[in-house]
Length: 453
Image (cartoon, rainbow, N blue to C red; front, top):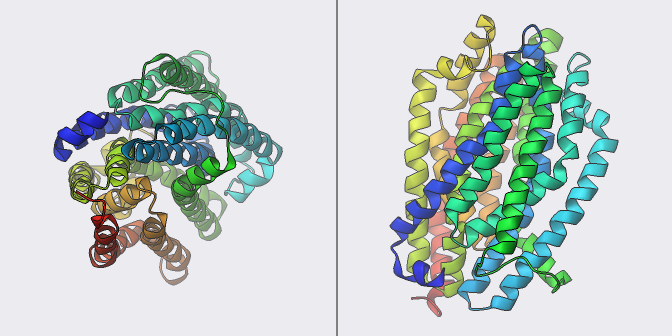
């Protein structure tokens, strides 16, 4: 790991690490999107089932945020420690991460099941949606242990340069999910229940692969026992909390959108608009997951070279990660503005829903090219443990979104609420660029100068 990171060009490493991680997230998308595709096309109840999954999505994503909090925090600490030549701290990082994921998964599962009714209604469920949402949520949340362990510990595979193996772990679960979705939903007529069961089984498959790899494969750092201490846990949380808070804010943004659509759209129009929002969020998974896959796969470059004090290679990492993300998001921007209906038709047979969702999708995605700036800067700084820089620029963009979602329905027609994302993406990216070049980069140069290369 150390030799390759020190000798190969950053551009080459970004492609080698970023592209497999991005492709892995394409397959990971299948967990969410395939469920929505299958249930959205169920005869008679498809639109309601799709809305039910859309209601559950923020809570389920919030649960998985714990996996990335521990995984990104622990893997970043491990990479920084390896860059500094501290193998003992690297081992403590992975050992404590395993213990944290076990404890968190058990606690989250219990709380989510106890308060599921209150939670789902708070997220915007109506009396028509709740029975389907409750069924899907209960089964899905029962697999929290497998979900958190698989996703969280996969970060340690990626952080040690095994991008291909990290991709395989995700592909394995995605393929199993697709096969079982078709069997359970249509073959056995199990509806949303079948979709949830298929997802849990696929997550178990991913977990088994990841843990077996980290235990049996000869790596720079393997899973071990012992060396548990509060200080290491605190350092993992101090790095990973950024990812956790961002995910919570992202989910609050989805919840707020659903709540506003219900409040201003009423029972019938609200359900229809929430179904459209679920389709849009499915497209945004295509935007977010692969983009974050690039930054996750390349996060170890930021961590390692920051730990080694190599300022130039850290800056090169920012540049090439941005370029790769921008190339991908630029393609999605063109597609969303020219042929949005092709994507929407995958999820719905209803012509009214197709027309509305296509128009809303075009509005929602106008500014997604700016997200490439956020990914490169925010995730790069997070991998280096620079939360004090990363959080404000990310928080600013999300606060803009929240403000516009809250205000737009009050001053204009409800349909214009779908411009909120575009406005926040464009303004947020301009703010991030300004702060990075005027404040953050000079401070990093000064900080790393003494030990830098």
